[in-house]
Amino acid sequence: MSNKKLNLFKRRRLRNRNKIKSADNKRIRMSIHRSLKNIYVQLIDDSIGSTITSASSRMSAVGKNLKNNMETAKLVGKEIAERAKKSGISEVYFDRGGFLYHGRVKALADAARENGLKF
Image (cartoon, rainbow, N blue to C red; front, side):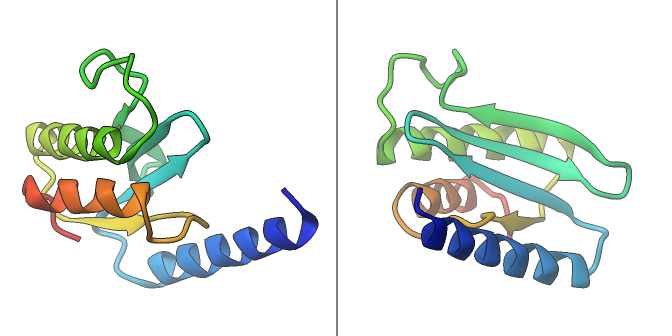
């Protein structure tokens, strides 16, 4: 990544995190990370500083042989929504980090919303 792209990514990430931190801390944070090969999502409780549950495209429940595309992101979104329901979580803050709300990140978020997670 070039220096300019990295700086823009860091600025977006800090801007997004500051909005979340300034809001009410009673909700859980849903953090997204997207790499070139996989997509990862975690539900984090910032008050105690621990991860409640997570899902990724590398998990056997989603299917390890899937490619990193929109369909895989939708499956990961569905899986995290189901795991959140099992944990008794219905509302979260969506922390996209520095990633743009576009493509795989948007597909994951839409699938999580369709399966009952509110944010």
